[in-house]
Image (cartoon, rainbow, N blue to C red; front, side, top):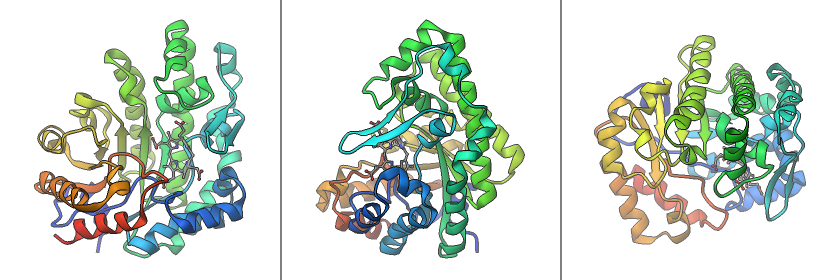
Length: 342
Ligand code: 1CP
């Protein structure tokens, strides 16, 4: 029998939506914190296949989610292209910055990424052996715009100001950077699929700060290019696109990019998305992650409302963004139980 997530991605309307959760392997889980302590730092965890596979499996054991997402990070691609990457405890990622055309030119070629990313493919191979037969394995990468914002600023930024400034100052160099990340992403996701990923997801976490023609050029076009290349190399492997905070640009996004599913953030009204986005195929989402902190009746009611809003079409239940470290594992169990009680 085909796995439920693959059925939803193929366009099937299921009586109970399959469920998984962004950042399901993470600091809210005591078992994650224990494994991470064993690894030492976050990057060692990403690059140690046995431990990365272990943390990927933890939320599957605890909650029986319908999908597991490879444990890695979107910033491994910049590192594989030659950037320095480190994590500052309590603050987040730091990268060496790209400030001009010379910085773009100094990057490694796209196919060099495999030299660094081999351990990630090994994690995928371990997972495809060890996951329960009903669980779908999702691989992922950051989308070019989001990855570029980190490569230019060297860190997460509130408004992606440095990337917008680079784009204004030297559009040709900026486009060259987007192209290099696009090619590297095709290489990386293809290798994940060859290692056993059954679905891949593109995270464009900062898509919401691109407007008008820039949204088309730097969010839609690279996604379309990546999806077309993957479909050519690996026909039948579904792609989930997450243009976070794309607002009305969610409508038509699947058609414009070829994505099999569009993941919705929690600013999107589910009724609107059922009418404007789900008409083109599967949608994923979109409970506010804050409910995993607060729990209670509001969690139950909002979970039911989302399931109800999307019940006439293909839907994968998820949060609208990653679960936060202060979430209560019991609230996650309540969400899963509420979705499956239908
Ligand atoms: O301290 C820790 O243990 C590190 C926290 C952490 C985790 C658990 C980071 C650092 N990355 C991850 C794993 C991760 N990152 C996954 C694994 C699979 C899963 O979902 O369980 C995935 C899919 C990501 C993707 C990711 N990394 C995104 C896109 C999705 C999103 O959340 O918007 C982004 C923007 C990143 C960058 C990043 N990595 C880590 C942090 C704290 C950040 C955000 C930095 C910032 O913007 O300031």
